Image (cartoon, rainbow over all chains, first blue to last red; front, side):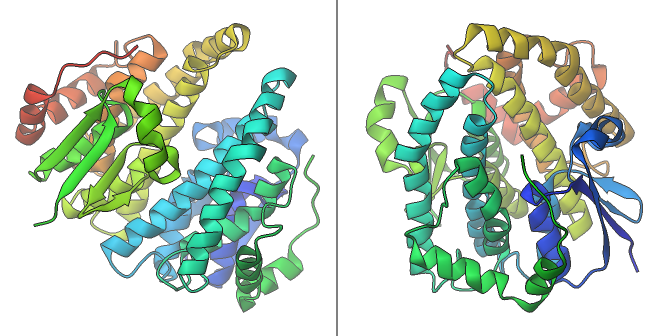
Length: 204
Length: 204
């Protein structure tokens, strides 16, 4: 059996879709979580100096979305044909675009431009993306693509708390379809079991 | 036969991998290129207000990398098994990470932080990524993954001029393996034919 080791900070963020998928697949993995002060010594050992990194039998893999897609294929969550896979990949990357927009404001060191970006986020970007997601899931029988569980659903829900943290608002507040969607994903037995044993963390 | 229409600005950038792949596949497509002054009227008609968008039989698809992956499957360039597909996806997203780092400096409206980011790019980010790419292609018989043509090669070469434009340096100067790689991709007959008839453009 292959040996899996996931290296990331002790918080959900970019690693969480991978943790959800490994849990969904019931793959035993070393969930190696380091503290911020360890990062300078770990960074030079990682491909391209970034995490998360998943090692499979000692082979270090970077790029969280590529890893999630790979795992989702093993889980039968990557689409049943090329067209469905395309729709799933688009949904995943739309979530990533929202994440990038949120991060560009949240991590902007310049207070003036940060505030300006935040106004655009609250008034334009967040309503645009979240309303579209709400409609999409509503039109697709409670899932992002074609009325069935896929990587897109896992990716969105695994990242959601991080996205709301970056946005400084609960992104699904007032959006009942996405609230029900989140609950449904978190009620998947393997994910529920992972969440129950997930280590405590604080994001600062 | 399906009808393809690609909508983007009249320059290569994010649309170019899609144009390369459609050309490689010898798919006839409408290469709809608009000028900057048309963008405000086109933007509201695009999913999530962004381009490139590829319409296939009237179905509008956003997310350039997802589209490229879909087309690369049709071209047999997306990997021959799940592991190879993973390595290709990682290589593509590493190129995208470089693109994002370059764009964050190039499009920073604050001259002070822009200059600071540019110093990091020139001294750290560009050597890190380009040296790794040079080594990777050297170790893989002239391609990014497993010694054969894949989406990763098309993606990199199609974006390369844009990346060098953002970086304000020729990224492959002094990197003979990547120079030979670029030449090899541009010498693929269908891509050579596309490049020969590509409309004139200017990036400002």
